[in-house]
Length: 350
Image (cartoon, rainbow, N blue to C red; front, side, top):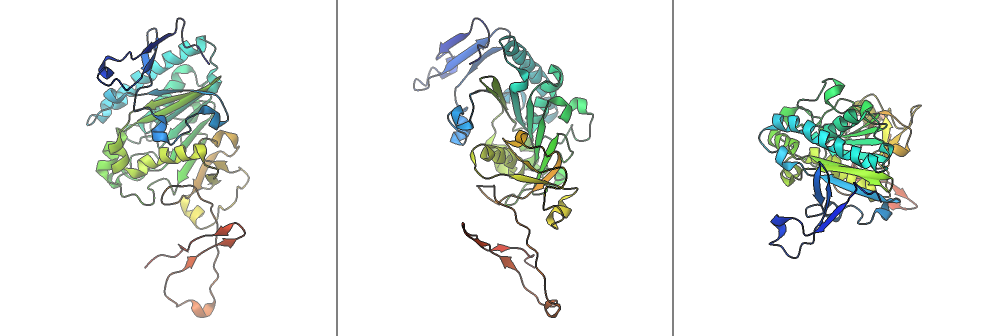
């Protein structure tokens, strides 16, 4: 494990505001010039959704979660945008300290949601684009879309940048995320604008933009750095924006692959024109994206509810000329050696 800074200070129950809760045992780690970090709630392994032991990830990881909730409160979104640059500067200082203790920046993986995605990019810019990987989960749109790469997440911020787009609809329709490509590989989930089963509105976009989750991980030589401003309100009212980190969380432990297919547009993808990996190659959205060679725009569909990962098939139906005037709906079920699927509607209901 990395020794953060000599001398390293470990203090049990060092948080005064938790003294009234004797059942909570807290370990704090303090660094010169930066401050103290501890494992108090709500940092509880994403409510148990992530592996409790790093060994389940086939590696040894140090995980740092950054909570900057005081700097990203409603209703002042623009102040939060300004504040994220200050927090990014503090994170850059922390990485400088850890680097002095032997950390390799190429082993750092920063994971950020919404504003946190752009914060991760700004850390990469400040540190010289030598961070190993940044994962942007539905990067925020307002104050970033189509602006210079200096102020937003882009492929130049790390050695590998993968981006998950889930809520790039127009803001008036509840969109909170960017549709603009900003990574080496960009995954457009169900088209990247809205997600099935979600009913988003403008209120959801405003609230979820302020609910920022950044995550980064470091393993023995790798560090997972996480920046998080918890906000269940954003999850509830903008489910499409929150779907990006739900999918990433699922990708950590599932045996199912979120395969993304290279394509120019979602319409072409839906019409079956992009059903193979072409010349550029496919990629796998989520935690293991850096193990694939495919780059550029990737499209995929997911299930409407958890688990979101599923296998994608192209079904072509040829109608006889005598049936062209027939009316109704068409559903398809697949049968195979490993089981059968339920019926799925493949034509409009009207």
